[in-house]
Length: 67
Image (cartoon, rainbow, N blue to C red; front, side, top):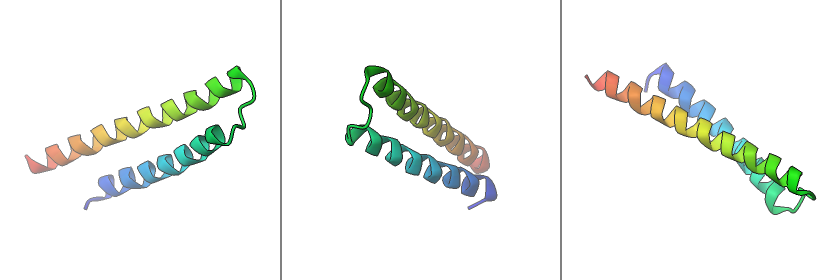
């Protein structure tokens, strides 16, 4: 595995940890207002989008390496 892929895996693991934290906040009922709820769900959505982008990058790198 090359350094680029290792870096992507590192970042994706960090994103997964952060996602777990925010999902925990959400499921614990901590957001007491709708605005707080929207903020937490927005962060979760942003983390998911970031993970998808990194996944796409990983796939592109693997495709490039296979050529």
